[in-house]
Amino acid sequence: MESPNALNHLAIIMDGNGRWAKERNFNRTEGHKEGANVVRDITKWCAKNHISYLSLYAFSTENWSRPKIEVDFLMKLLENYLIKEAKTYKEHNIRFKVIGDISDFSNKLKDLICNLEDSTSKNSSLTQILALNYGSRDEIARVFLKLKIPKNSTKQEVSKLIESNLDTFDIPDVDLLIRTGGEMRLSNFLLYQSAYAELYFSDTLFPDFTSDELENIIDIYKQRNRRFGAI
Ligand code: FPP
Image (cartoon, rainbow, N blue to C red; front, side, top):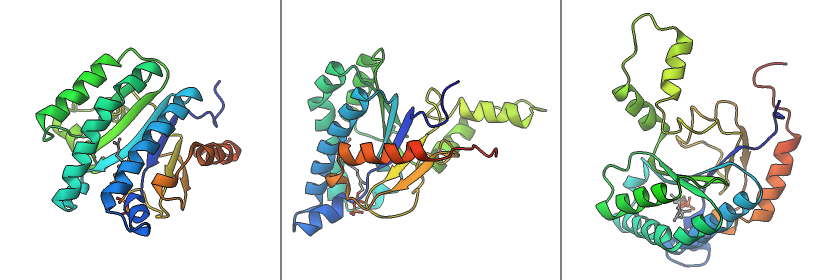
C-alpha cells in the first residue's frame, strides 16, 4: 500500500503578485508576468520530481471583480503562456487540463485550451491543472445542474455521483495545499477535494517562490502525521 505521505497531488494558491509589484513600484501586471515565469519553473520541477498532479489557482470566479484592465491583462497573459509554453508541455511529457467554467472566455482562448488539452492528453509525467474561472461553490453548483439522483440512493452512492461529476473527476484528492503570499485562507479553491489535504501557508510572495522552497515544504509535509480521521 502507498505511504500516506506520498505526494500525488500538490495544489498551490498563487498569491502575492500584486504586492510583489507594488514593493518595486511596478504596475501590478508586472507581478503577474513574473508569476507566469514561476508557474513554468515550478511545473517543470514537479514533472522532474515525479509529482503526478499539480493544480494552480490562476483565475477565480471572484477575480472578475478586479479592474477590467487587470482582467484583460491576465487573459492575454494566459493566451501568450499557452502559445509560448506549448513546447514545454511536449518536451517534459506534461498533460494539460483546465478546471472551472471557461464557457464565457474568448473563442481564441477556448481554442488554445482545447487544443493543448487534446495535444497533451496522452502525456504521462505530470498533469498540470489550471483553475480558470474556478470556484468550489460554482463547481458544486454545476454538478447539481448536471445530476439526476436516482430515488432511494444511499449517501455513499450520492457521494460517488458527485465526485464523478466534479471538474476533477479524473484526479485524486489533494495531498498538500500551499498558499503563498502570507494570507491564511482557502478562497474557494478545491474545497471538496482538499478534505484531508495538509495545508502550508508561506509568507513568500508568489513571484519570489522557488523550487528550493517547494522542496523544503515537501520535506515538512513528509514529516506530517496524516491520519485521515483514524487514530
Ligand atoms: C493572486 O495574486 C494572483 C492571481 C489572481 C493571478 C494568478 C496568476 C499568475 C500567477 C500568473 C498567470 C498564470 C499563468 C498560468 C499564465 P494577487 O494579484 O491577488 O496578489 P496581491 O494579493 O499581492 O494583490
